[in-house]
Length: 444
Image (cartoon, rainbow, N blue to C red; front, side, top):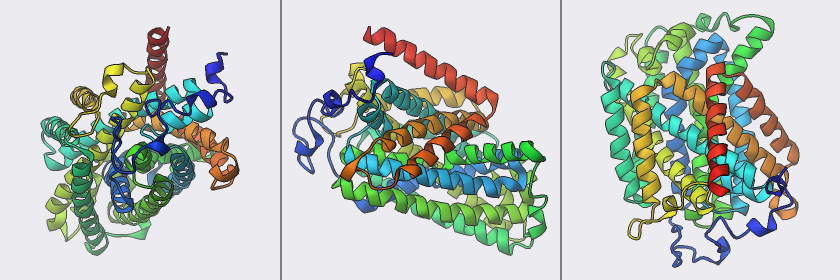
């Protein structure tokens, strides 16, 4: 084993992920050496986290999860939320210690060695690129169900342009999208519970399958629903752009996650009571189907607009987060160095943003929502397993929570990852292998 992979090789990495300069020595608002600018406060950090999560699960992941576990999707949601909480706490304390762009890519390099940092970064870029495609396709499915792909391509192109022109504009637009999303979800709950079709009996049978098969189905539903919770990584990947990161990130991540858990439980239960798991499983636009089932079906067009806008909000945040991770990886020569260039006027990694937008458009043309969600879930679960392992190594004042929380999160991520469909697992492992091969050749 190369010493690059050993936890002991951390000291020489301490200054590298930020362009060979310590983050603590940069100006709190503007970095004159050419780095990103610290413009984001607590409110915007929470909003960006909400924008990354709200929409992904409620408008897309409940269908595949209901297909896996039936009404047991409720248990899967609870398991996914528990693992997400563990991951969020690990990510929050790591981001407070290392307030730089890159998220677990940086944490893995610092705590575990460069190889594991690369695996995390490559997994994040690959998985979140698939997430971008899934969100583009979801926006298309809600906006124009008969022809979703043209809408998806247009969404990817438009929001790549928005990210190109700067993070402050991203935060403002995301705030608007989050408010509209919450309004749409409130309409869903009202339509489902007051439309005359809600029945507790729709939650029975509670288990799909029996014995170990039932457990596997519930865990697979949790793994698919985890796709909906992974947006809090968006806050951590912006560590280099957050004001007072040690305080802001530690508050923003659990706050955003707590709000999202409450919303998901309320909306998910309402949809299940209104139409049952079978109809959700068959729908590419499950909340529109649930809303249209009762006497308040007139609210369905508003829900479709909300679903499209929610997906656009997630897409907007994801594009920025992936671009920042690509920036950090390019700084370390794990990706081509030309991706590390920051625009002199808009202060964004514009080359990484443009390349990402082009790849998302290509994936949208050839993929579907369910395949993209499965692939993304596996890649991001591996990413968070590395985050938990990194947090487990923290000592002294760096550690804010007990190690068992990180241990539970790491084991939980690996277990959920292995329950996903075989095609998702094998495809993601193949892409990870390609990335490792390219890195080895590039650095040799």
